[in-house]
Amino acid sequence: MQKGKKSYSIFKFKCPRCHEGELFPSKISEFTKFFEMNKRCAYCNLHFSPEPGFYFGAMFISYIITAVVFLSFVGIFILVFGISVNKTLAILFFMVCISFVYTFRLSRSIWINMMIHYNQKKVDEVAAKHANDL
Ligand SMILES: [Zn+2]
Image 1 (cartoon, rainbow, N blue to C red):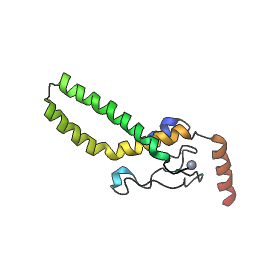
Image 2: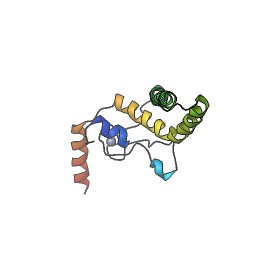
Image 3: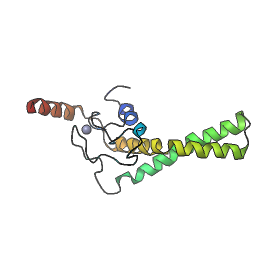
Image 4: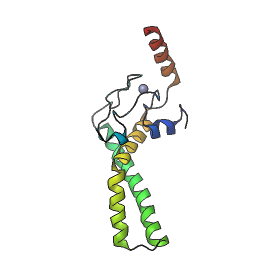
């Protein structure tokens, strides 16, 4: 994954415009502030919530990810490994609990990346401004 590509911003949870600032104040592995998001990009000052309810659409992304990933797992568990439906549902519940935060963040990251695109001009502008401040 390289800077300037959508996949970089989406999976590294970076600002969609400059690919420098973080979307979230903490890493998932830090086990804190799971559902908090930074208000603005620390690098280019992009507002991450341009309007109230902006992330409403991210719920649909989350739904699609969950449905596709977990239905595939259910299919594989039942059809390939022959595990019973009850056991499969128990495993699925466990997996949903574990991956919930990641799915939440991923869907928001995908959503904001659908709306805002990488802007090399803005990155150069901000870099020049930062250089002038030094
Ligand atoms: Zn930014």
